Length: 261
Image (cartoon, rainbow, N blue to C red; front, side, top):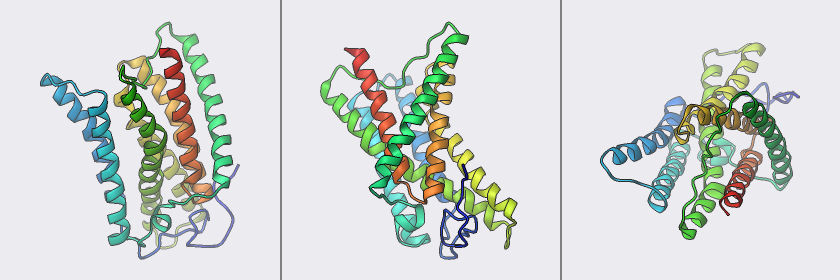
């Protein structure tokens, strides 16, 4: 299964011959700013907890939605002021109907991988990981959580990690050589997939309360990051990854609701 297409087109992100357009002047720093939004959110919640203010339920969701909103605003500003002026052209923010089928197939594959990993983890340790889906006793808060988890988070997190971040990594590697070799072009694509998946995983680690849960989270989320990053590189669009992400989050939420009942 190849990562890139063999099409000689320097403007096509799917192509091995892709080069960052000269009009694109944003890079790793542009991707680091919205990542800081998500890093600061749990830090702020932790600081409030130390001060005796517990943030959960709707207030916690409001903070999360605030980080998502800032990310979208930042992406639009970066695209208009430092890029091509289009979220589709700058970050691959596009959708086709075929992406529903691609995303469904990818989500099924991801869940099979996650189930296998879960079985192995359970067999090697008596400790049981806790879920990172935190439901509330308030039905309204759970509805809001569902909207954020299934609609808002997949769109914004894919725009950030597979749009700004992954492309910034690949562009940075390619820009280091005026005429990168074929090996360097492959390395740029592979490194961008791996590093974006790793950072995507790291951004979720604050959701794990203990070591076993952290290991389970890493082993469960990293494959998602790899699959959707591969899809974004192979298709040049975020659409398939957004669908995959939404389905995986929706299933996790459905399981948590079923267990709660």
